[in-house]
Image (tube, rainbow, N blue to C red; front, side, top):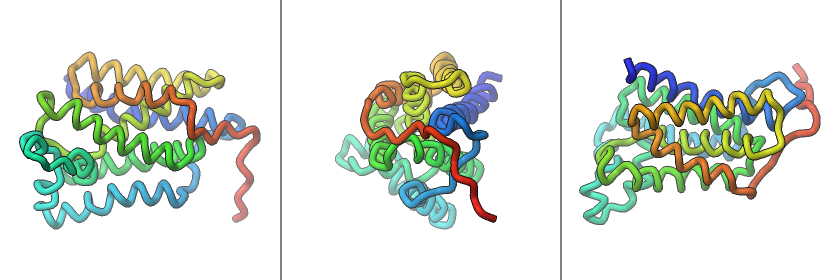
Length: 217
């Protein structure tokens, strides 16, 4: 039962963080994801391309995943490359790529690309250091880095002067982190790294004072 609820929390965390971010950066608009821009597409592609290739070439998983015994033996690149392959099969891959796309699209009007990229990749490395030694020595996937990015966005929104419409989903996202910690899911420990990342006052690009321009059809 708790595993099923934890999966719901892992779905809600990025979605609520994205909603909070969009409501903060575009307070006068109906909440919707913006069109992707090059930095968002590039980061998503860096993760998605090897993740999809891995479905046809499973050796990529064993070659790039987090394996703490091999990291201790000197294969330090695995601290980063484990975020570009997936250990959850087709369903896990689809889930991870969808939540990454949603969070990246929400972030692109709130933070400058450099901050989004840095939060994701530094988060990926630090998350592996946190969970690798004892909690989950062997694994792969971008979920931890995505949850760190989502938690950082929610924290940043809450630490800003924002509307209730943005605060409520941001608080919901952080409540999901708390639940994952409560049930001992290692994703919760990783997501905690997003709290200090979200409090940094650098690389901001929002909120927007007016509505988005109308799109011509």
